[in-house]
Amino acid sequence: MPAERVGQATGQARPLETEYRPRLPLDLRRTVLFQRRGAGDPTLTVDGAVIWRASRTPAGVATLALRETAPGIVRAAAWGPGAEWALDQLPALCGARDDPSGFDPSHHPLIADAHHRNPGLRLSRTDLVFDALAGAIFEQKVTGVQAFGAWRRIVTWHGEPAPGPTPRPMFAPPSVDEWRRVPSWAWHRAGLEPPQSRAVVEAARRGDSVARAVETATDAEQRDRVLLSMRGVGPWTVAETVIKALGDPDAVSVGDYHVAHEVGHALTGHRADDDGMLELLAPWSGHRQRVIRLIGASGVHEPRRGPRLHPEDHRAR
Image (tube, rainbow, N blue to C red):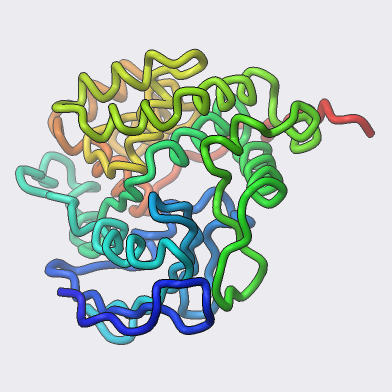
C-alpha cells in the first residue's frame, strides 16, 4: 500500500512522494517502459535506475519519477498540478489492476517457460484514453521509426514542458484542444502522413466525449463501438489504444505488420496470417494480449526475411 505522502502538489521544486509495494512480483522496467513510444519519446525516459514519465492528467500536467529501492518496493516522486492524480494512478501504471485469473500458460511450452521466467511482467495502463488513441493513430500503416519521430516532434513542439528536475527536456502531450489546433504545416514538417494527421484532428474534435464514453462503457463491445465510430479509426487502432490506456489483457492488434508473424513463428515455427494467429491464440481467450507480451519476453523472434522497409519522406528538403 502507498505510504503517507509528503510535499506539495505544485510545480515547485519539492515533489509529492510515496512508496508503492505491489502485492505480486513486478518487473518495473518491463511493465512501465511498454508505454514508451520509441527511445526518444519526450514523455518517457530512463536515467540510470529512474524511470521518468510526463503526462497530462485530468488535474493537469505531472512528472513522475520511479525507482525500485528494494525488491518489491517502488519509490515515486511527482511534480506539477497533476502530481496527486499521477500518484493515485501509479499502482495501475505498475499493473496492479492486471488480473491474471484464469490464465493457463501450460497450453504451450514456450508460453509456460516465458511465464515462469518473467513473473513480474504486468500489463500496465495509463487511464489516459485520448493520449493512447492519438499515439496509436501516429503508428497506423508506417514504420516505427517514422511514427516515433513524428510523435517526438509534435509532442515537443506543441506539448507542455514537464515540471520537476527531469534529466533532459521532457514534455506532456498536448491537450485535446491543442491537438485540434496543430497547424497543417507542423504535421507535414513532423513527417506524419495526411490520413493520420486528419484522423488525430478529427478524434480531437470529439476527444473529451469519446474518452468519457470509453471510460463509462459497460463492456468491451460498447467501448470498441465508441472508438470505431470515429473516422480514421479501425480495429487495429482500437486494440492499440485499449492495450496502453486500459491494459486490456485480451486485445489483439489484428492487421499489424509483425504480430501475426511473430505469434505464428513462436508457437509453430512458421508464419501465420491474422486468421491463423487468432486460431493459435484461441486457447488463451481472455488473455491473448498477455500471451503476445510473453512471446515478446521469450526472446524468440522470427528471422528477418528481407530488407527493412524505408519510409518515404514527403517533407520539403
